[in-house]
Image (cartoon, rainbow, N blue to C red; front, side):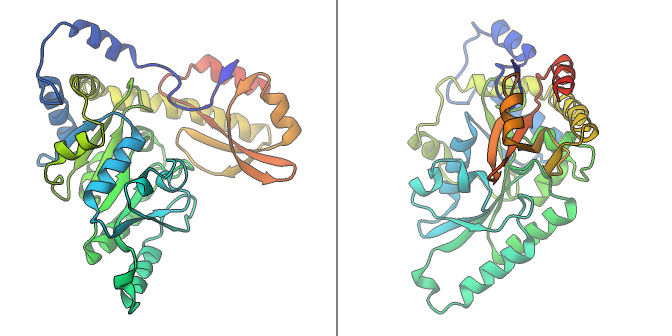
Length: 341
């Protein structure tokens, strides 16, 4: 069975596994205070041109979103996000569980529009009853989005300016950031995320790591007593070295960029096969996620030989499905799937 369900089915890149073995008996400080975490943080600062950033390593994406959002917001504030945003749909109410509302706005191919965010905040403060309402306290975006689309530099700049004008932070979920940076049609580079957001995270779980995300506070200080708050969420690993070590490997000798480019190369080849054989695309994206509209009988037939993700119902007879490539996708598997189409 060919597997294109997601980009985190495999374990971890072999260089990470090898490094874990090599360092297994080295004794280090706990809770992320070790040399591996320090070295990884310095490499990330260099890669994203943010020498003054504060970096914390956490284990997973939902955990990261919940902790960052809940520690930045005041008790009476909520977070603005696209209706299709991960925190809006696929995190089981993790943000609401902390007492904060997700304030969903329409997404445009998964992206927020800066003008609509500005209008939402202005409308809120123009309401004479706003003291009785949930205040918009920050903006959440993802890059790539849940539909594999990318913000342009102009779009991200506009959002950042709107957030600055209202005194609220812009937070970017970078679960698949490596794939966004490697996409052929992006005009954003790594340094742009440090200058055009206030905090973002670099995804490791979906880009070669066994687990782990690196949170980068670049435009605002890390919240006070952040370690204590992380621990309150049950997210402070005693063996934090395992997080830092993985990012140290990923950001050594360009590995993160190399494996991200591999996923994009596989996706481009698969995307061309879908185009050549006349398949309908639900949305055009150039990252590692491909969204196709399949007739239901066609979907059932293809699923006998290949695994992919249900995304949403298109109509009574058609379904939107997702094919995802990853850092570990085999070129042979892409060829085999193309032959089945």
